Image 1 (cartoon, rainbow, N blue to C red):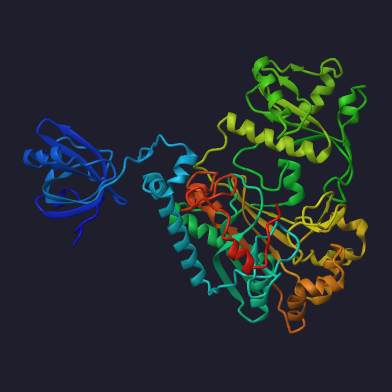
Image 2 (cartoon, one colour; image 1 turned 90 degrees about the vertical axis):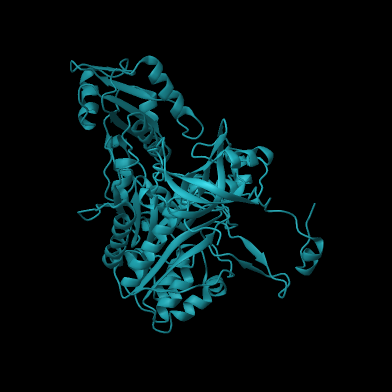
Length: 601
């Protein structure tokens, strides 16, 4: 028996008990003729006490950091207690020990706060995973997984596996392509999601399906994105949007209760896509704080066909405002005393390439009620007061104003709002504010496409199997109304991050063909790429819809982080490489010959 207990479970009630522990040496501390060793496993740390005789053995054959050892002895009360660890009131008086395996000197300290850089730790990921931080993250991931499965099972869902080697189809991100040896010159694709398979399962009568499943997208990486990721993939038949929102709001509340001990007493708020864009500048708003966007100038029909034009900045012979398609402001609370240096820093921030604005205007709402702005040359206080009223600004607030093309300016102000939220400490990591965003546009016009489909065409905002709102199906015949057709789609947003999304699906062949036509996919191409799905729709497909939650993102948010990398056991770096395995890598030319592939220099 290598161990009778783990390194995190012994307490004062175990005093005088004989025990055997095994684990990794965290530290070795010698005090004259005695030695203390901290022994670590994934459960915790226990201090070992080596007497004079054993210390002499250690002098002859020293223990090093990360040596794997076994220690036998008796639990005794610790003289110098350590309240920072669970086992801090006891220690083990060692009677015998065995070195099970030696260790080279680790390239970084394996502690809570390590001295290793990110790339180094990823190269030695198996060592980094020994750190308590990552152990807690992976434990949280397991607990979320278990909680999800318990809920889905209780709700009557089947966990059904779908294939990883599938057909490459258009739309969405780029596929990872897998060559077939047995079918020379032909290729599989790794699934970006099990979308069509779960729809086929609905046709097959399995009306409640889910998977916690790997998906693959060959796209540029960022903090919350990996080339392979995990999602909670779900589908239901004979449902409407309300059924799905209620089901998966229930799942989210269940997970928070299980994993965080948190209750959401009320239903999650809901917001249309148009409302989210107007109030927050993006479709995944962080509603933990206010500072909402207030439009000062906008064209008619900007986000919805019923939008009216607005202009609170014109008539001042100020070219910046006159030429701008869109002008928007936020009121930053308590910031009217910002110095010129602080305002210049904000201006430089919005001028960065990532934001793309040419400048920033401001209005200070002074404590005495007066207004002072960077555009006093063009606007008197009465005009500025109109802006302040539009922003509901209070004395002591600072109004920040951006002007330019609508889409870019709205996005820039959204980013500036989040930046100010960070500066003012309004985005609290231990506060959770979920909401549903609904009624997304069905289609969007793509000026450029990377999928070989050319430029200047309509693409599905979600995917080509998303149904339009029932009362807008007839609009599919009128391209002039394409910008305003709403999808029967929804996203679950948490603290400014899209945690999941889904839709009611098209389940009738004729409507699916209309959708393909709107996307520039003719019937021949539709049959070639999606014939299996169109065929299934001829055999009694039920109304159905579903949702997929980003499992990695959800775990990271529950852990209070925005990056998903430390919640995945073996992630890729920002270049999509596994630096531990050194992958991707070249393969043997014989393999290429078997696959009938040739690398062009």
